[in-house]
Length: 327
Ligand SMILES: [Zn+2]
Image (cartoon, rainbow, N blue to C red; front, side, top):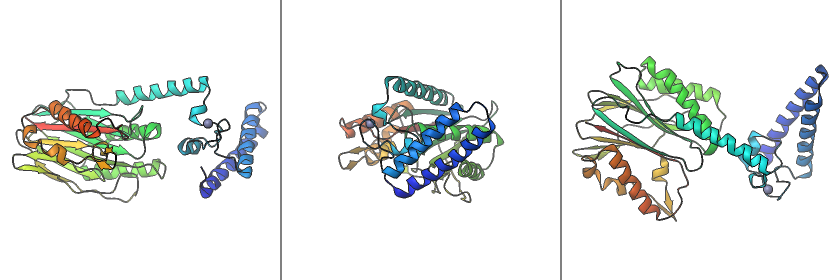
């Protein structure tokens, strides 16, 4: 962290906290913990003055900026965590993985007339992608399919993903217009998240008769494959969480027997091998075959094509694929 204005912000935050703690120290008798925290803050302020703030006190390398933003008192980089700290971190992460896995849609829950499957693959331990399938209630004639991508990766992104999950599950049963649903979620997200966290997302409502309504907040356009070829339906809006006043549109179209809708995150289209980027034409070459395949087979074909393209290069971003087929 060598950005002067960011350090200035953190210094202000630390001075605020110190004042707050000093007020507390005057009120309470047991002040040992408060005094220890004040000492930690003074030590951080001193490091800012002598220019060593944000550098690991073991190896001298910069501490990861995201971690420092979350905890301005950090003195050690991740690589130099003690065995006990490493273990605590691993425990926290495995808990985060469990929380996230529990939020994924259960398999084989789509409405009659539809076959749906998905592939969800974090780049690191937890994912910033959001993948969901919601059927509002037992009598419902429609189902909601959501694929999104939160800025950044790792735990902070996965927390925002869980936030999105909670909001959609709360609002979907109200059966709002899709544009209104997106606008409400956008407003809550704008009011409740940090400036630099936002999400792109595509929301689809699939009806029993094959009608699909779709609304898109800055996300990769889905691919619709019909008898007459492949198109990318829908228009695009502003990512969620950037502007409270943003409005969203929805479009609708009808899917017929054998038609396929593929939703995906940019872990697919931004996969890199050297300077080359994965191109959708690699998938679209199979469009006619896709009409005879199950969603699972389509996902396997896409993954095989992606692996062939990567040719051993490591995936650097979370990947989500969701495939809907009209039966
Ligand atoms: Zn270090």
